[in-house]
Length: 248
Ligand code: 13P
Image 1: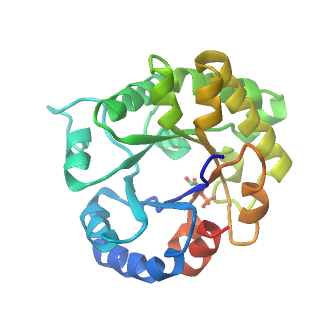
Image 2: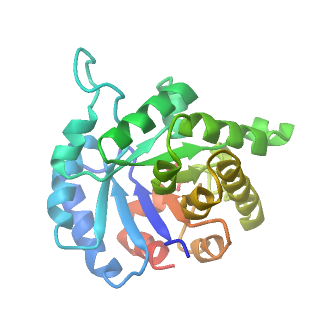
């Protein structure tokens, strides 16, 4: 049985002080949860998040990182910088980064490989646009994104990955994929992993759904065989809502 993993992607929200406040509100609400709870906060809030989550069952992730160790890359953050702070997870290839910051399947792969070199667990995002869904290429596309993102990894590394299936048309729109649509693609992603890395990797990899997950729909989504939790945007900014999702 795979553990249910719920991660909040705070995106570009919350100052350091607001981060401490929100985590302090969240801590007692998720303290009894059997599911894993991660908060992926802005870089500038990582120190506060690490401090505020000490001794709790909440873990901390970043929302991006660069694929080089150090050097002349103005504005970028290296994996070591995250590790030294106590960060355990890093979102890689979110559709907003692909759309606005020129992230490609190839840079996603480089970052995933680099994350593993440093012991960071990547939360790799894949997903189709509305146009691609209407063209009927969703499964093909997500399968391809998955294959490229995981290229050159070992089966043991793949077992430790988290993949988040996030249909772009469902992000921040209030339009959730139906549980059957989400399950269909998560299952296809798992089959892709099996095809390339074998049955054990496919059985162990965590596959989340993301896109307008809220306190009202999380339970039904997470009950699906191939959906092992969620990557949550808007609803992760409210302790009451996010805790319901974490406890689903
Ligand atoms: P929303 O939950 O706000 O739709 O965002 C989803 C998302 O992009 C999480 O990474």
